[in-house]
Length: 359
Image 1 (tube, rainbow, N blue to C red):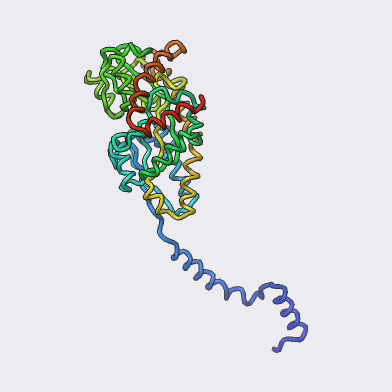
Image 2: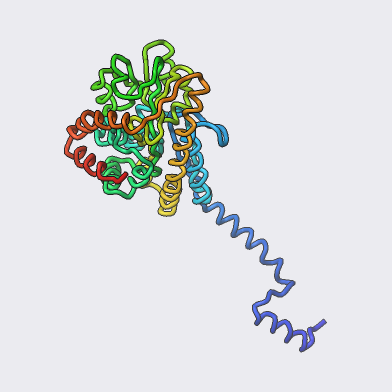
């Protein structure tokens, strides 16, 4: 039946107002579906990046916070990139051994890692700055490093050699010993002591001890076999590897501990980073920086938990007062600092800037 003039005018008015005519609406649905499918098909497949570290795997909110931090980073970046970047995490050196992680980053053979910066000292001596004893002694100093001239110079140096820091992870160190507390450097005389880096080894040797270059995961076994008397480690590692079972005497990590803080950052290969899209680069940088404060809080929590863990193992706990600490800082400046500065002009410049970071 022909439309009346009134009905035709009503329909024309509806169209002019931008309103859909009910009879035409179903016709748009297949087109929209096809367009959505085409857009989905045009999206590139997610890129999978691998993160390696040599610390124990965590479970939920329990376990080594370094593994938990890496997994939080991965989840955050995946969300920020709408799934364009995904990650596989390999704890406990299941992908790359600790000694090869820094080298792998530089060559682009490894995507990301969280490890002691000083692991790169054999290739890049300047990286030993991350473990120079008694250089970073407070949380305020650790927090200031990223934006301080020392941190800026270190980042520039690393990027020039293929590595980029994403999260600055600073950990206070403790000294765990088998036979008795190492409260001052002279207590190390005659002992075999795991140092963890060349600058710390220089200090240990000057104290009359024998420095041992052992990976942190080998400490317990070496102590069990009687080949190691004491170990200088982060508070986090002392807990994760349950060192109280083999070395029940601890000098606490409060206030940075006997040797101060050590730097174990989350890093990405510059070759891998350069291959990311601009939005992905922004997501990676933002997610990494957002974890700085969380890492420091987690490290502090481990330092606070250390005395209780060793007391529960029927061990002894020694706190560092100002009188004891001065022995460590004096020996560190005379040994580890001096040796690091002699490693090259860039090392000397970096140490000078590091010493200027306010406490």
